[in-house]
Length: 241
Image (tube, rainbow, N blue to C red; front, side, top):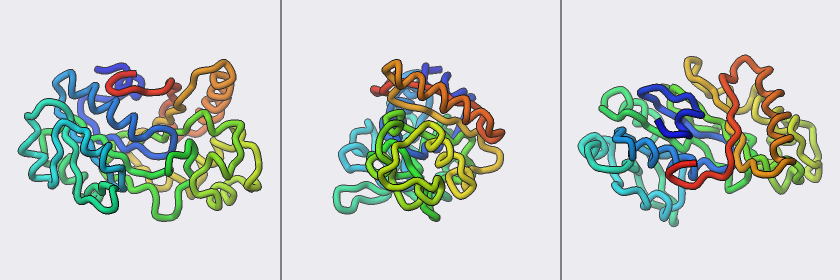
């Protein structure tokens, strides 16, 4: 198992959904490439959109679930996409991902199930994130660079973030604010499958100040019974940490 997969506590076969902000696409490829390098059959996909260049960088790109099933013996992770629109690549709907996990021989399906427009902190809207119902692990990402920034500069969907926290747009974000957004009853937890493990990944941690903020965030997060574990990771570079 790769270092990242070990940190996440992944089992022998998983459907992993990545949500939140702070490096989902990088984690998608780091996890997928690392697992595939160990001979695991890996499918990467998105239930939202990612850039065309990112999606097409996979060794094998498949345009349907049936094509992905047939290509599982190919080296490297497969990227399952649906169509391209305005330089963005869209993935299949979540029920297609669920069916592929149920019926294929893929060892791991890793899904980018949310969008954050490059912001480190995500407050999801009412139709977000789009998490497949058979997800076994949901990884909620938050970039440590959200801490100390203005809410309107670091959060995606600022109006929702304000609703969750009561903050003003120019408020400086604290670890407590991040946790309030991540764990809000109207937030990501409302769409996590009941049987799925929830792992919070605090990303881009490098300085002493980052470590202190991440430690505080971890302590607060572990008060929530729904959180299985919290991991703290530096900037990811595919395929390994």
